[in-house]
Length: 568
Image 1 (cartoon, rainbow, N blue to C red):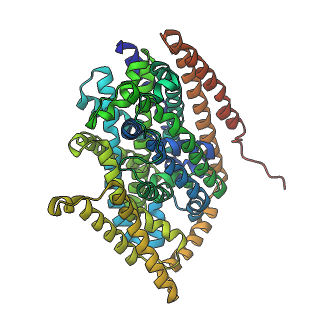
Image 2 (image 1 turned 120 degrees about the vertical axis):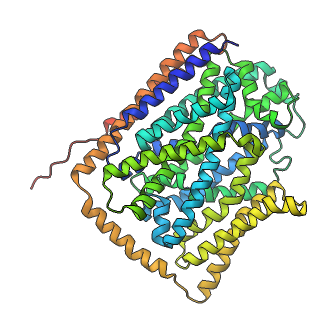
């Protein structure tokens, strides 16, 4: 395999992404512009960014491993994300926008009090660093194996690059590169899929060489109970995870917040079918992979069918998708630290310049922690075990109570802490202590059911008890007063100059997206001339990307940055 061309493709795209981060270095004038895009991000940009934030190389490694071993059930599991997003769009996204909070942590402080916020900030930061650190590992492994580079230096180098443009550019830098990553990844997969079918001998060659149960909706340890629990989990995760909430609060209205979630749902209805077929096809080509080697199924099919240059494009898409997920987490963790710890607890009088400096510094601090976690993933049993286990342990206890508080007048701080701590304790007992002391381990399905179901049952039990006694939480009364005061303060603080700067930033972001798509189309045209196979489909996809350039460009032309003159 000629790795020189692939390496050049990765380096060129990476340099372009870093340049995008530098372009946004001066657009973060204050916390609202740096972390929330001035609360005026176009909904379709927010939706695509949300989709990419959910993506990572772990999608190809973890779900690709399940697709290789069990077939269609990998798609079934990912469809639970579509259902979670639909429920979020109907009920949760507009509620988050209505709160007027910059971050989910800010809402938790205002609605449930400072002790709950401090507890959640500590646990959320820890969990985010672990999860996003764990998804850095598989992409480093993919790049390392493909380009014959040492794993540890590769992990560190990719991690440092991942942090750089987030720390410099803020939310718009993350979202612009999200769109570029989405296009690159789609282009790579749409090239890979027909080449994979061609290698296996078409649909008949594929279906005749896989197990009889390969197209079952449920398979192996992924039972109906697991899928049902995963639906509930993804309602909580997509509706309540702090990185997701940022996408709903950064748009201009509740209607736009709904559209963000609906676009995510539509993409997750279609994309799993396209993403998961290549590792399923590789099962028909080489059914011999076992153990952790199944995590390499996606890489193996890529190396088998993609010509030089296009393999580099696929690796770039995988890496970019991972950096999208990790960068969103970095942006939100940094936002929480800067807005809710430094400004809220340490230095309330901090200037905008000080806050931006703290934001960028904290991005580097937490990013280095993610790199450290990535280096430890192999010792923890692989990416599938790490991601699903952390999700099962922490998802329900952390996400369910704040979501409940969006609707409940009765939930208070003491009950929130009690539910969260009880859920975490029970999940840790079943996950860690029971296997060691009692030689007992829950199945994957029961692990998820207990992790998500227990907090919801405890919250429901308290809600029914409080309603029967007519209890209204004191924290809720205080929250109503503070929310109204915040609305008044925002009206007072709003200025024509600030509104003009926000429009200018958003127009600039859309034009950078258009330029990024144009750059991607040119790169694809160049690669099509070098491709030994797949040249035609590569050129066709390049043309589609070129036409898509008009969407953000036309949207940018509709944004007027000059202040309106009101005649007396």
